[in-house]
Image 1 (cartoon, rainbow, N blue to C red):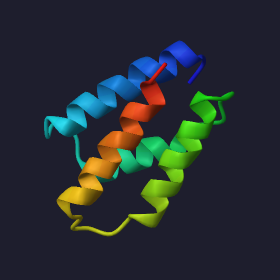
Image 2: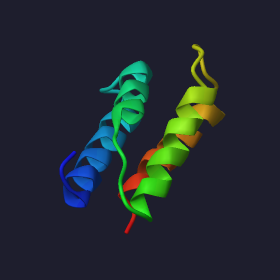
Image 3: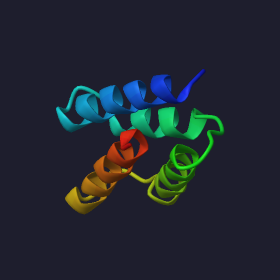
Image 4: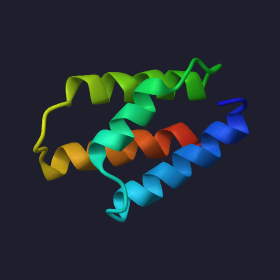
Length: 79
């Protein structure tokens, strides 16, 4: 990612696709784990999402985990 705007746009797109079932969880997990460092507050949210996906890396996952995934993805793109 080159800028916060790019990060926010990508996070929204990934979240929407994942929520609609058009993106596999493993693909989302890999995307989050490949994100670089960003300044606060977005950087803090990226690190939190990465930690979440590292801890919850086994399939199949419960509906609660999927909701947690979506919450973290949404947080990355929040103002």
